[in-house]
Length: 258
Image (tube, rainbow, N blue to C red; front, side, top):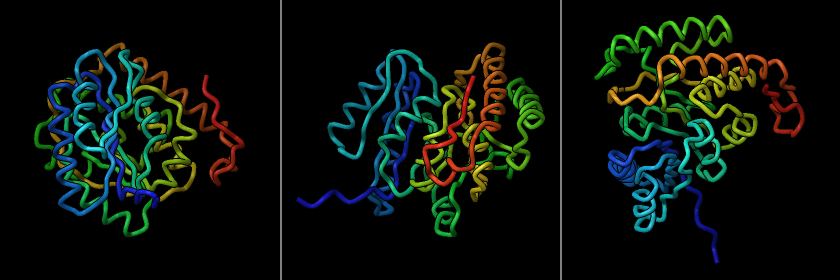
């Protein structure tokens, strides 16, 4: 029996209590991929106690290109994406917010970058602010700017003005190398990914994308940002411990986190 063809793209949708939006997001992504004529895979990485996993599981019964992972407890966005990556088989793999902050049609721009030889393509709200259709509340924008200043002072990454846009895609072999090293379970896994890409000398395309805030942030401003800051310091320590041999795909020199 012939093996099933490899998907062109695997899309991971990390979701924490997204029962109100997940069916629409999956439906829009599936319709977009079908219009493009691509074989696709959608993995819903759903944590939480609402019906998100059950809704995604019902969709998966009707559409075998959809799969579901996750737990009742909240284990973190980074862990959810990392776990789902182990099941992703597409030539291009990536993740997007389950509440559809970036329309999936923006991937057209990303496809062109991969055709041009880039290893990673990430969305950015900073490159063209006019594409932010619905901005965050003013206090979150101030907090984000302050955190960005601290991030760049601690870790560098000054070439990435927007590290947190949740629309990032990778060549499959690059994703395998990065996520074998990736350890952060929470929101700062985006930063860890970019720090690893910088260490590896990978070609990263930054692409302005349409973005809209849904006013439903799950980040607690004070406690959440304190944890984020601790994770940034963990990433800095880990980057210093990585052996360049790991970048060639060996099993030596894994990052150490404490």
